[in-house]
Length: 220
Image 1 (cartoon, rainbow, N blue to C red):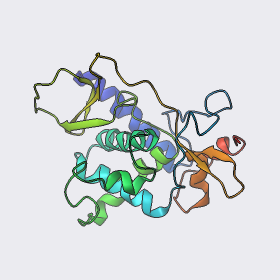
Image 2: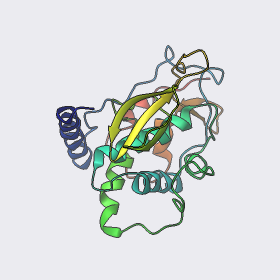
Image 3: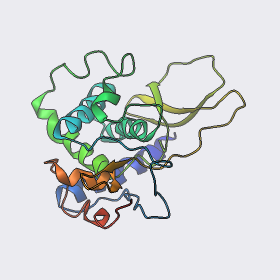
């Protein structure tokens, strides 16, 4: 990814984070879900409602897997975590996604986090839980340290950020995975709501109005 493009994304991310800290929604648009874009468990993965512990797991994955001073890199790693939550092949809870064996950095759920770094990773986690994603990572499920090379022809690179290179994997016929809808959560009443709407049920310190747009989107 050219340096000029890195600068553009960094500037947009900075503005988005200012929007969050000031009570706005940021500039990476959260995708609104409608009955036309998502409808049933047959097309969307049903996952566990997020908890404060899940937010902490998301923060830890970003913190230990990227350059901690690069908020774009944090957002990119967090996007992969949320993409895996959406994907049928991965667990249905953020902490379980992050805790999968040999998927993230050793000790990702146990090593100490510097208190001075918490505000930064919390801001980016808030963006992700409000529905924002890194615009170039897209639906990629994989990444590795930038600069490494591998002899596989099924790795299709889409972004570089925070010291990592992000990629999608094609199948044996060369096709990339089809896009999947965002995950949903089943309420106590049996309705399906977007994962983003379910964040309102726990104290996640989300920006004001970040999830209110989703409250009317309930599906059976």
